[in-house]
Image 1 (spheres, rainbow, N blue to C red):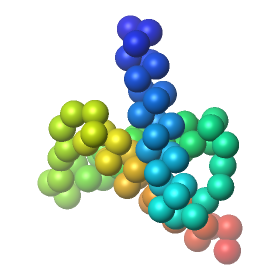
Image 2: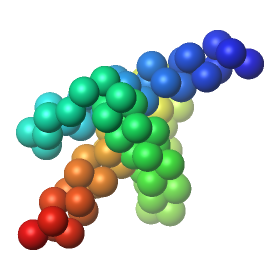
Image 3: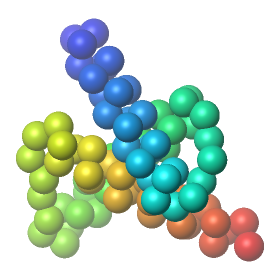
Image 4: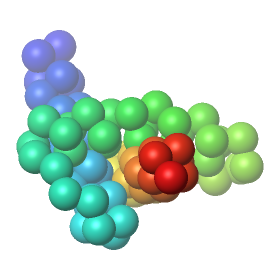
Length: 80
């Protein structure tokens, strides 16, 4: 149980960090974790709806990174 939470936070941090690099966003560790988790919550259902699925931890990181990039993109649109 606790390991699942720790692994989820680590995956969220990696996904948020990757999205920050891809999108040129700057944020700390906590921001990256939150961004990665939100990205996973958005990316999973969105990619599933178009028929794309990823398996394993690497797939989860890819899916969360795509979702986090979308979150950054939408936030930038709203800020303008």
